[in-house]
Image (cartoon, rainbow, N blue to C red; front, side, top):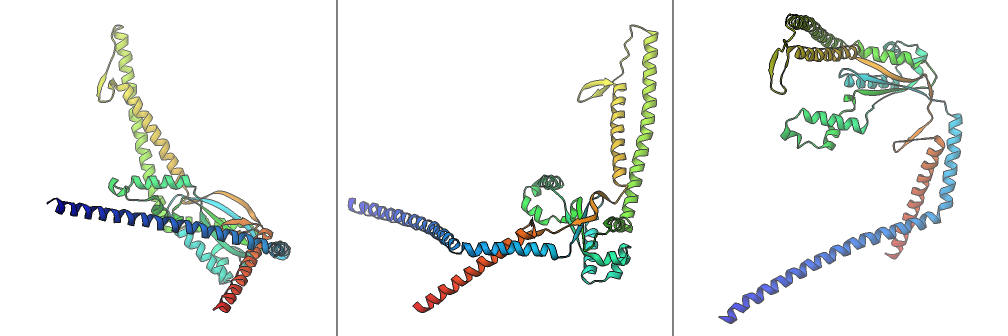
Length: 357
């Protein structure tokens, strides 16, 4: 019995030993793999440093040539004038506005000057000078977070927990944002204000948006009228209460007129005070309605503009950053030179490898 009981124990010890050995080997291979990656990265960094050191003169020459090319192009190229406006959308006009800008750009690319002239109601020379229309949303990260929070409040609690901020941003369309920036680029310094005004007028004259505006304004006017009537009745009733209290006080100096009503939060309060509080609430609501009517007065409105006649735009964009032509071409030529040298080095490496094979 004792020999038979020892055999299972020895078998379990052997199995555990093999298991720990496998785990140890797995960790060893993992650490070696990680170490090999860092070692390879270090070698790549060292090779990069020596490669740049070897060709630093060539890269500097490429950068200087880029600066020279940028200077020449800056002085010889035709100037491009740019102007922009910031608009506020009081209705969901974004998709319509983006489609309109895309349509204008199509006319520019097709060089359909006559149609562009008719649509924007400008002179043919002005239409021919326009080279591009642009539109983009203006929104900060804080405003995006605020929109995300407002969106979550419209959802059921269970559904809201499954919505990720990144997914919300991916599905959020640029034209949905309230503030947009429209930019016009042209070959000549023209009065861009006329063009901007016509773009906005084309949206404001849209039949659908005008109908929605009319419905909203009528609704706000009805609400304001109802509040005015309530305020008149409230003032009349308040005057009655005040006269009753004054009359009771005159008839009996020891009388303390107290007209109470039940209130769950404060226990009780006078009807006069309750009317006064309600009156303040109505007046505050009336102020908000009047502000809403002012906002709805325009479907789309211009909030700011810069240089109606346009300013020279000679900046080049590189990785989302605006650069001067000199710096832009210096960077581009340096990068191209580096890629060319890297390609030659790779070809030489293949030739050496071919000889060995």
